[in-house]
Image (cartoon, rainbow, N blue to C red; front, side, top):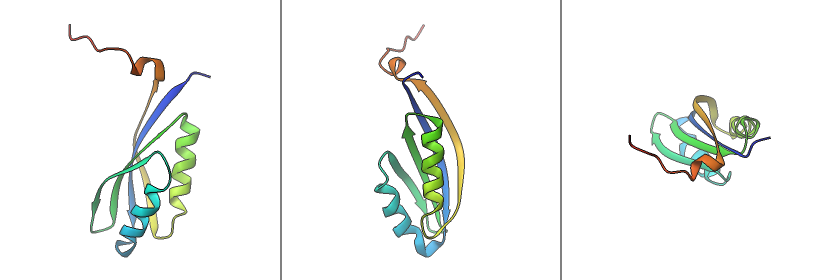
Length: 91
């Protein structure tokens, strides 16, 4: 299996009163970042991990947090880690 980095973005819809507790719970999950929130109960989140299975496991875990109504996967990208250290040419 290749050494890959998977990056996914999500919209997490929560009860408005649960916005802060859910946001705090997400920050304790490891490779999870909350990039923005909306008072109506939406959080923009990114995940990073070694495989698609890891990402799906994290999504399943997020769904179990009290106050979470839905988790929508918006985007997922995988890249071999060795390519992350290569330069980009502008031909």
